[in-house]
Length: 211
Image (cartoon, rainbow, N blue to C red):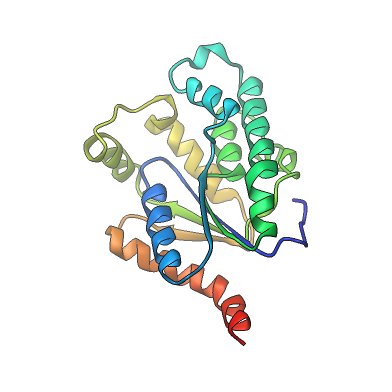
């Protein structure tokens, strides 16, 4: 992935299959860091922009788009996200907490039959994260959280056989900044794991700023 050496902020990404608690933990971390005085940006992919809204249409109208069309939408949405929010915020020294990034595209579109490594290469315009927290839990846990916890019906991207492929691809992506998080515990337990990794990332810069 392309390096952006001018960036002074940090990009922390929350990844994993549906129902692993990524969004809950992103928001908890955001409040924790804000209380510590860090400048925080909370965001997500797909975004709420025009391409992101088309992507959400995929959840209910899968037959309207080919795999290649879907991938093109994700890339277009991400290009806007990078240009409009991610890079400017990093240059300003902000800490970005992002729910899903190009690893999700590789895993989910890869589960549809596209090559995950090719997808990662196509995202070389996007800044590499400083930290990826990969949330892992048994698929039954995720399904229960989606149906019983949220009261939602599983969409096409949340069916068990499909998510098994997604989880396998996530686990196959190896980068030094990817850290696995056992998401099967309580919200508080998982939050403590998240904070441990994030403090390890931020503490040197925080100490240097205080000198």
